[in-house]
Length: 343
Picture (cartoon, rainbow, N blue to C red):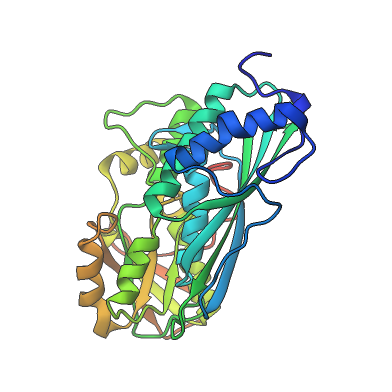
């Protein structure tokens, strides 16, 4: 099985393990060089020791099963890393370190594994947040779908930062940092073999520096959320319900790439429920709107930031929107997953 993951390496850990030479070779020759590059790996212990300043600890975990594992603009490696960074950042936390767990199907090409690991390693180095521990398991052929990844992340939230999904208040303004729907359509197009006149790429990105710029700039962010599965509609409905408020959006103000809008129309999809992986929704008081927009538009990941709605008094969880064709429509939480396995 030259060039493929072998089922004999089914006990693999970035720490001590019992997988023998095959395990050691897989870690030392494939995984470690891709993740750490010339910097070299940290000590191979059974757990990572982290020094956390006196602050609130933030911890998150997520699993990634995107199909296909590679798509325009990224792959499961950088997607998993960025998604976990973003879960920390949306609570106002400063990410400190991540773990990675790999579930590999026997026969998954080592060349593909190297590609995934390189992408994850590059994302880690670009973000300044290290991957400090991990584990690998190999399952028999047919018992998985190539590669699944679990990531966990730890960070700390400085004193004074109070950001919660329940923090929206009447009079607040809703801002997004760019176009919606890019990731979901990129994955769908690759999965279905669709080609559009204008290429659509995933927006996968780590948002922690943008979130930190807002907080360091003195913006009173009541809520920060990244609209991933279920898209913008799900995130806004959750914020409205958790905060006990109504939210009114203006679809005409929501940034969207022309190619994404055309693809959604062709496929019969509502772009409001299509997944994103590099977008954040910020809910902030009216007094901080101009400051927030200036900070976000000065950041590479926020150049298209726009005000897309307002928080109002009203029935808890009610979300409405001025539609692009005129009039108003209700935005409801989608039932089920519109596009499965997009992360």
